[in-house]
Image (tube, rainbow, N blue to C red):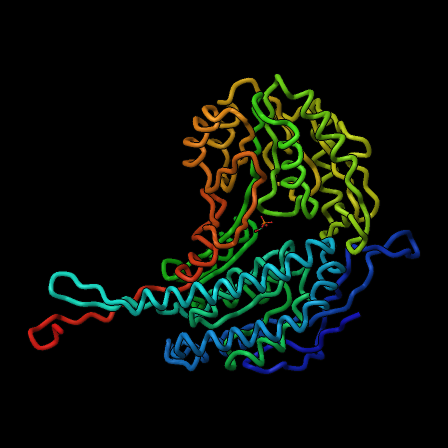
Length: 496
Ligand code: G3H
């Protein structure tokens, strides 16, 4: 068990002996009344007082852009980040173990999350060098010569979800930090302990007050920070409802930059011309990697009626062959779910669909054992069912039969979100015809492959309620900074 008794404030690991939040694993152990989530440890339950101290520390470190960190040269900031990466790598094994225990991510994916995060930071360092080279070039027009620098924005509040507690949060925190901003880092509810081994790396690598951590209930600690009006950037990954609520708290919302990655219910469209084996493999990866708990997961599958029977049969067989088990066991794909209310919610969605005429068509589909939910393929789903509209964020695959390709297009037109779509067809003309409408409806069209964020150097965004701003390595550096010009009028004496 890890009982974290410190939090990071103003360059120090400050001792905490106040109330704590207990952290439970999705992995269950036998208890007095049946299986119980195993206690993993606890973290400080900090209050509005510590939150405001963190804000003051971040403001002081930024000091209106005149602090040590925002005025440091790019080379020096990169050196600090390299030190952080070095220290982070020392904690690799422990962080991977904590990811498995805390969020139930299997060994392969937990390892990938850690390594991908290190790679992401290294990409960010390279991208900043490139951006800096661009910034040191001069532009000349109409008798004026200008250097276009990139300046930081101020204090960034960075918050992210449990599904990639390390990688996703760092896709905002790291670029924000390296661009010279100072950070308030609200730890996620699940996946909080996985950050514990990294706190001292932040402390050692960066000047004091540059990164400050916040723990506890959002309503208690985030509300006063937002209401202060002193946060310059909200970097939030989660639901659009929460994001909108947070923005509304800021008294000068027009001065707040929001970098948000939000709701998504990405559709797959399988036409009668698809290679069904490819479609099945990719849909399994897309819908069930990390039990479907990814914003980029495929959450609704449209299949053309001519091939619906064959596709659903193959899909059901493939889903039923997936191995459930504990995250560290060899070859395990289906693992326990960290959100305690998720099994009940998924059951509700399945019951709603079956009451309205759909069936769970795979063996053991929807079977619940404590925190495990065996994936369910639900067919035929239609627009009257919750599973057609709600982002289930779990191991349930709703399959919708369709006649005309207009049907999935209309789904996307009417949807409140627009992150990604996957189109499966071996007919190049058909694919070409579908790309155009979808390029204007979502932010990534995948052809014969699952939906996903990677490679991380690609832009990552969404339309409607799916995102605000763009992440990825290069875009994020721009998102967390602003152009600032140094312009000189050309005269005869300075022309050369
Ligand atoms: O939850 C959303 C993640 O950003 C998904 O990332 O597509 O690389 O798994 P991924």
